Length: 250
Image 1 (cartoon, rainbow, N blue to C red):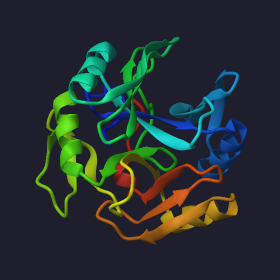
Image 2: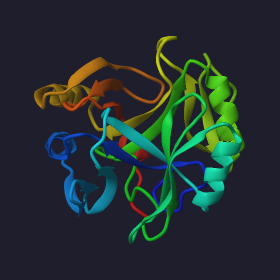
Image 3: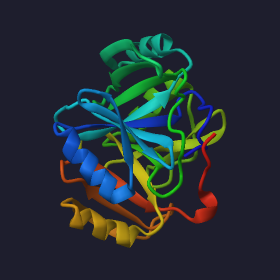
């Protein structure tokens, strides 16, 4: 995950949790990460950590899921590029007062993602530290098709595949991953990873808060990791990030 601040086009810059019970989600993530919440609407809030914005919660939606938002300097242009590449717009570009402009899209494989044109709010203000966003990856039965789509829309490049998985790059710098789903019948989706200083303790905390540990914790090339589900049903990953890989708010 790049440092917070100016986000390059196509870089995952923000995540939003869509859940039917926003207050329940606030309790879970306050207990897991120590997040505070600033209300931004009747059923919406921005999560903060150490005073920096780290994620959004709401509005209510089914099924519960973490939404990855990709940075763009022009949301209308990117929305048109999504359509031209075979994707579709689930919500046309719209203004987010005092923050920026956004749109909701789906790629040809059905994975939902957001487009974010930052204004006063360029995206997450703190990343790669415990309790904050650290990595996003697109997993699908056809990662080659996913690579072709996001290359066409955002001009992303990719490292040489290893077991079907590649790191994608924006302006030459690592920005996220694209790879195969764990099973052939899995739907295409973006997966959000949050940093923790101890993946085992964090997994235990997930269980204590009513969530579920789906796999791990186990060693991975990115750090000790665990796939979990919160108590509302949204899936995400916990990754132990070494202290020297943390990033400060811009």
